[in-house]
Length: 154
Image (cartoon, rainbow, N blue to C red; front, side, top):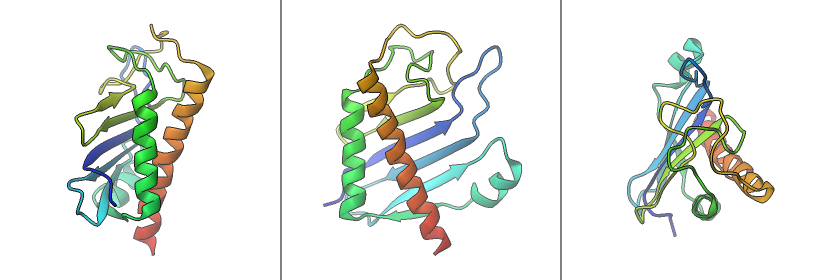
């Protein structure tokens, strides 16, 4: 059974200072409807114009399998349990990675504002277990992105 429709954005480089952050990579994964056989992946590399030209203009597809469905559901389950700041102005997980999720049940989660985070300390303190869970969420997103890239090269 495929996951419900979702939109996911992973941004590497969310911490800025006086100047807005300079993302090194942005990956957008979307599934528009449960019956769709593929998750669409679009990647951008703002800090590397050569990669941007090669990769940014082509959408890739990730076939939906039981394993892929399991990863998406695991990711959503993790995000449901992780805290965020009301106004995400600091990188409370300390990874310089932003995850933005919109799920099928109206659940939305983000650990960074769209314009990034400052270098300050957040008001929410995360535990080591929460940090580890966030690391797993990042790992899941990386697995999904690699599947899209590997499929493109096949």
